[in-house]
Image 1 (cartoon, rainbow, N blue to C red):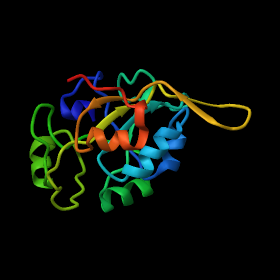
Image 2: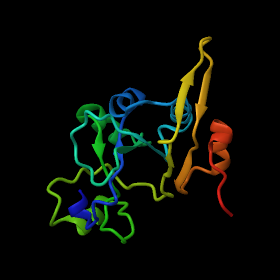
Image 3: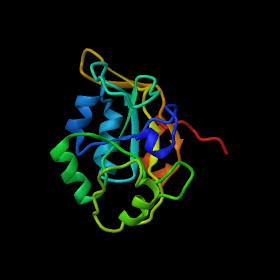
Image 4: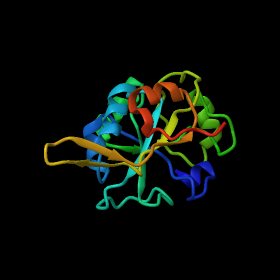
Length: 179
């Protein structure tokens, strides 16, 4: 995937999943804030970065032990993921080029490096997903079972999901943005 896009290992692709159960299998821990965000914004334009399950033997590039997860809001993509399992993905373009919105555009960009194209019809042109880093979150429970979360959630890339909407779910765990 990285070679096909002309992208270096320092920019690992996100992994599309179909549901929270797939997320649980891919990550070391799933903080309560991640669950709340997923239940609120998935499927949709939210990508969350968590610590990867150490037992995973895939090579996504220089992930620093993390994995970026997203549930797409597309019936064909979800059906494919249900059939195959999680998929490392990227927009269908060469790095630095506009994302393809049709199979023909994707073919024009990637024909020499991709063997199979799945045509699900035109993709709605929209803003990229918002990417949040949740790797600093730590959930602990006291003797009475009360949850306490430490750490912060950082916005890695601003996208379709507004900061105010994220804050409405996770409150002060979202790091205050500069500017």
